[in-house]
Length: 256
Image (cartoon, rainbow, N blue to C red):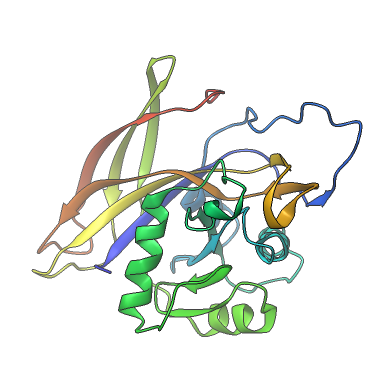
C-alpha cells in the first residue's frame, strides 16, 4: 500500500456484545452524536507532539471469531489495557464471508480490497478474519491481545498533524468537511495520500443466520466512509495544506 495519513471522525460511546435479548425487538443500528476529531482528542489528552498509532481491524459479522476480536478492540478503545500511547482504532468489515449465510450490513468490497493490499504488502499467504494491522507495518490475529499490545508498543510514531476541520451540511444527506493545517512531516517526491475516515460506534445487529446466528452483535469503530482528501508531494513539514470532502451520510444524520 502507498503511504497515507488518516484523519478520523466518529460518533457514539462504546458498547459490548451480548447474547440475544428477547426484549430487543427493534434494536437501533444508528445513533446521533457529536462529530469529533481523533487528532483533537489526542492532543487534548496530552498526546504531545507525536501522533497516534493506527490500529485497523478487518472483521466480519459472518465470521465466528470476529465478535471476540470486536470486543477486544472495544476494550482497548475504552482504556481497559491502559495503553501508554494514543491509538486510533478503525474496523473494516469485509464482504467475503457473506456467502456463509449472513450478509454483513457494514461489509464492503472496498474494505476487502484494502485488506488484500495489506496481504500483498506484508507478503502474507492468505486473507483471514479477524486480522489486526498496526501502523500499516505489523499484523496479527485479531484475538491475540498480547500480539496486538506488543505491536502497538513497538510501532513507529510520527509527528501529529495540526489539521483543523470545519463542518457544514449542504443538504440533509451530505456532510461537507473542510481541512486546513500542516502534516508536520516532510513529504518527498513520492508523495503521500491524505485520507479521511468516518466511523461509527454503538452499532447493534440481531444476527439471524450464519456462524453467529442468534447473537446480538455489537460493533464499534466501524468505518462507513474513507475518502482521499488530497495527494501532496515535495512539501516541508510546516507547509499548510487545504482540502474539502463531501460525504454522503447514512440513515441518521450527524448533529452538531
